[in-house]
Image (tube, rainbow, N blue to C red; front, side, top):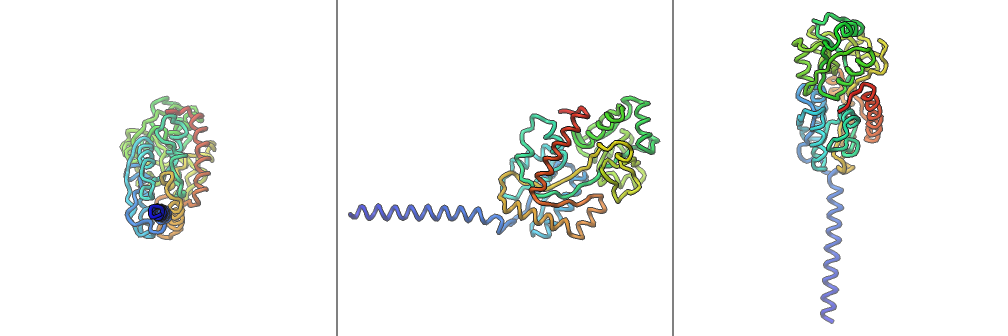
Length: 331
């Protein structure tokens, strides 16, 4: 009888231990959003310092640091059109302390590269769209061209001699140049760089002739007279240069190379953390201080829900896959 009592008591102790363990696990799962964040957050960016993605991440990160009470630390991992950074972020702990600046470059890579070591559309949890920045077609002043029409004429007169720079193979600036070649019947030669800043540096030095680049990166050089702007590769004109026509106005409506950025987390990051970050991002994008910074640099704030961002990625994937096929760009 005593043995039975001891067995029953042991069973009860085991049951209580199991219940307490289950309760602690449930509490642990519920706590991340309650006390999150309690240490600095790393934001992995696939572009070098000075590129449009880097500038945006620092502006948004600074504002978020103020509102969430923890520092957003920018980690630049340039290369392979943001794929190096994306892979590192996708493999990071799923605790909300490593985020990723997703961009159109990742969509383009996913659309045309069959052997990536990660799946951009499946390995990340979208948090929210941050901003878009229109792309500007610029040339070196030594080309002596003042319009898209004149650039096309110059390229036709010198097949293969006009060099257009880009921030890397299969980036949107690369595809924009390839689309211009295909639609205008010209043969500008592509010169890829590891990011926009070195490409712009060589363009200013006259080592290349033309480039599609974000306004945030090249507009200061246009204002300084070091580069000449010909057109917007965007659906509409931008307020920073309202007199500059779009390529659509000049007869090429399909040449939209607008660059967008959004916050993402590794897949399976707790949903309450993703939701909290989404709310904080949307609030930051309404801040007058951040809006002023973005406006000066040529960004247009976006925002929206994680679901909005997911649908946006799907539409962009379809768009850029078709553009790559039209331009004949593959990896």
